[in-house]
Amino acid sequence: MTKIIGMVLAFMLVATPKTPIHAAELTSSDTSSDSMVTATVTAQLDLNSLEPATETLNSVVAGEALEPIHPLTVQDIAKAAVTAKFGKNQFAAFNAIVTRESNWNLNAVNRSSGACGLGQALPCSKLPGHSAEDQVKWMLGYIADRYGTPDAAWDFWQAHNWY
Image (cartoon, rainbow, N blue to C red; front, side):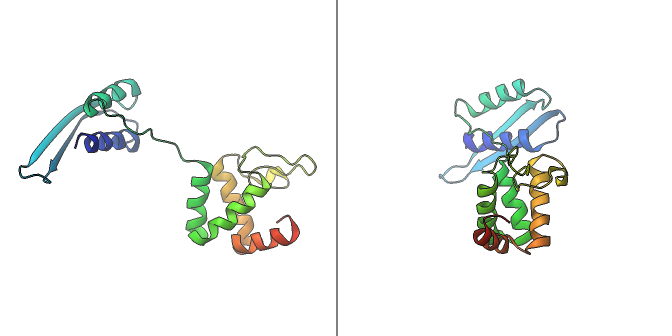
């Protein structure tokens, strides 16, 4: 139960806007045994300062280590965007194209053509920005306009070694 409480508090730390939470109260019940056990945790969390929040989480979890919270990767961002636009079955083709074009390097530049980014935009000025979100958005638009789907773009890539 302590681990569950710690995970909920960790979620609150990440998912809550960056404003102080003066008190967070969580009640959890475990009815798996014959007697009901109820725990109530009150914690002071200041999301503007992670050190006190981390100390609070460490004391609440009572020595149990929480798994680190990892930021989204470029692949996570792309998978969500491809799935939303084309469906989850299209990500394999998108992944194959990006792997061959830039190996998922946001800063990739083709020395001979000057194409850049995940999808090797040419010229680079076509990219609305250099963030993962901007590059994936551009690539999805390019694929949709030119090929219709990532699968069709991948078929073309395989036949011509470019897309």
